[in-house]
Image (cartoon, rainbow, N blue to C red; front, side, top):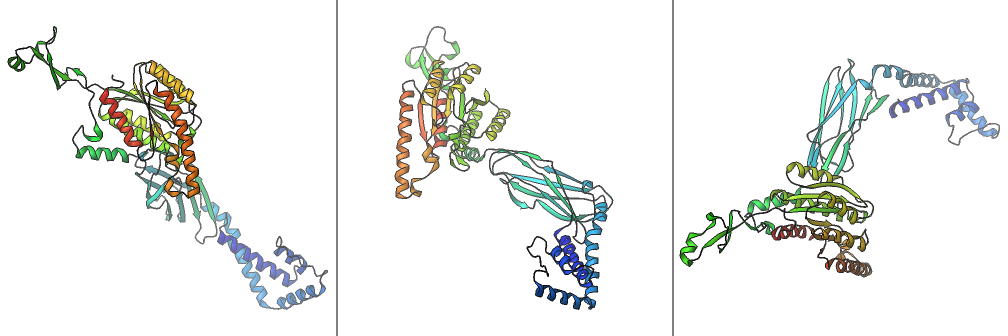
Length: 485
């Protein structure tokens, strides 16, 4: 194809030839000028304007006697030949298919905010030298280049290989693709170019941000175990390692549990009782209905709920509790049975990376789905704004879960707190916002009244306190032994 430079040269040559042919009389003013200015609204016709036509003819007769016309026609011929006739030769000498392009990344999975190093390798598999080569590697709009460039302008000799690299920062969770890659070959003079798009892609899975967990791990290194976030063991009398209390001897008590020092002091047989640490079984119900997508971009109710899920998931893994997850909107969309281990942790991260707000909320379908697969009593934690489902449906879901002795806590992001701040509003906007607050609170109170009678706790949270409340819910549930295995 002709480049902008080649097109300019070709048009210039055609103009010079046209003017020269007209001046030589090979073409007439009435035939050449309309061709030159076709589509521009200029169509002089000497028959309609005799004076104007005579002036044009006299000017061309003067030019016909001047050597400038000959030089102009010669130059125009050279320009046309240089820009047009050379095109087949360029196509024959340049073949973009001989350029092999490969891409390599140092990781295909990363947490939001982390960096990925991308290396692009270009190989000229042919023998002919390429003097002007451009390579552009497309990246998603959500990624930011922090070092290097995602393109190169270079030259390649036959069988030569070159590389260029750049570092990108992934910004938010999801699945993204790097690519395609565009290859452009130019001739030495820049008259022609051949463009070829390589539709090969590298898929990047971006987990939610790990920053909250890093802060928790940093605190755990500075504090004693058991003080961080009020972490506690589940206290249960048994054959553990931690002393609990002394009790009177009862028939059948193990002989080794007798405390002879206490017997010598009191004259009564006493046995030592110990605390045995028990694990709990916890299932997080993550609502990703359409209303959960409300809020500031990248800090929506769903984003905070995902961060909360990751945090409590990591805490459960460290304390060897069984942790399960179900995501749902108008139906259950993904489910992992309660378990533990690092492999399961990353499996859960992949689910959280792909969750998007959509549809309405059906907690009843989610509860039925889980109870069929986890028949034992568990600790259910709902992360839902209670806005995409009727209160009757949620009440029925809670009743069914409680009938199987499951413990339930609802952590509910309060919509208005995520969408705006009263301090940023005018007096009129503040009055409207307060009215909306009252409407939301009225609906919440109806739901709370329905659920309080069946032993379900609802905690209304905003962006500033959702994470602490999720942590508190887990630690208190573990301390009391909710959903104990």
